[in-house]
Length: 553
Ligand code: OOB
Image 1 (cartoon, protein in one colour):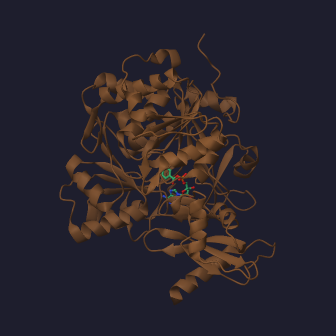
Image 2: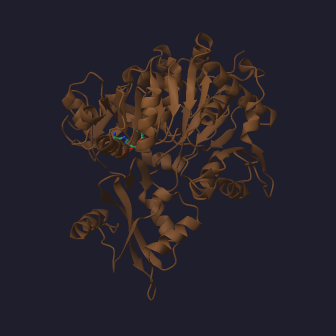
């Protein structure tokens, strides 16, 4: 009898049976592991290059073998299907091999970002009940082994740390091993013995988080494969695609929308890179990249760099996918005029729903809208404060459900009540739906700061600010920025007789191991924070205030 119950059942929220049945019947869910599609490409074109990182070029066969070796290594070290592994690697070939290895045997990678530090990783590892961490030795100035040791010290389930680089000693119960050793064994893995079913959890993504630390978003094999296949369809990804990964490979956008997984689904080639204009544009020419995905701030730096230096000489780039935050309308036409590529706007979320402009849409829609759902079974409602649908052309809150939009966060009954209504996910985005179905993101009703595509929860920054000596009340708001769009500004009132500087805030948050992008870049000390009639801090007034102060400076 084939297994029908998924490995993980506690903490997850399944789709209602009638809908699950419909998604299966209509082929949105195929009942196969995400890696099944890639296994087909491996069989078809074993010697074709699948992945490039610097001088490393891996064929489909080589990538598959390393993934298999990694999977076997996990099993040999006592991990089992359904176990969670926090994955925090930069954009490198190991990222793909580890992810595919996990997926093949139902071990669940939890997709941490390179910028996360012990504050975020401890929370995520504890919430996931992670048994292992996969990290790189160093990122920017930080020794991540030290961070991992701290995480393992406070999360008892973490017994193994795999390091890309040199392991060192670990105090306490966890062992630290060399990641490179996990790729040496080949051809022993028995895929059939461990194959996940469609309803199994494939991976966990992290929410940008409207409240507190990141939440875990459970994505099943059925749902994530559906996500990838429809993004491939609308993104025009095929075997000729050369896709460059620039934003962190763990983020949903370059991961599966359509991302590097989509490219491998189609038999194309993946090139690992970074956002730096110099590196990315040079790599683009050298590797004849045809598609890549960036946030608007990165698109802008590339456009400026190209204008100033003309680095890009070839014309390989066909499509530049831009998403993660709102593409400024005035920047949109320059993607074609300066970079010579078709702009594809992508308005997506780790929680599911992906909208894209179509490659053959009229320029007006490509430049001024964030596109429409990629999958015919996606459902979108735009509602007013009372939850009533508003007519097209009227701003309202976005609600969505569909075959790749999960029904709840992992193990968060309380937060699920705030974000899910009757099975509809409320993204917190304010959108306008046009008559042609395209959505325009007009704002958001969630308290978030979007810094160059990184979603920062104001509440999380505030709770960290309360731990700074001398701060009495704190409110984090977005301040406008020409490149990143928004940065974090902290308003604070002080306890009497105290003096607090921005340096103090930065030092305190660094010491707590907070990801650098969340740390406030401006501090405004005030006598009193403005309050609304219901006694909430009036963020709108603060946002207006910071705009005025910046204009005055
Ligand atoms: C992507 O995913 P997340 O989970 O990091 O962030 C989702 C949120 C959305 O709810 C929205 O507030 C904002 O980021 N957002 C956009 C946007 N794309 C995302 N706001 C305005 N315009 C856009 N084009 O950011 C993500 C996931 C998959 C594909 C693309 C982006």
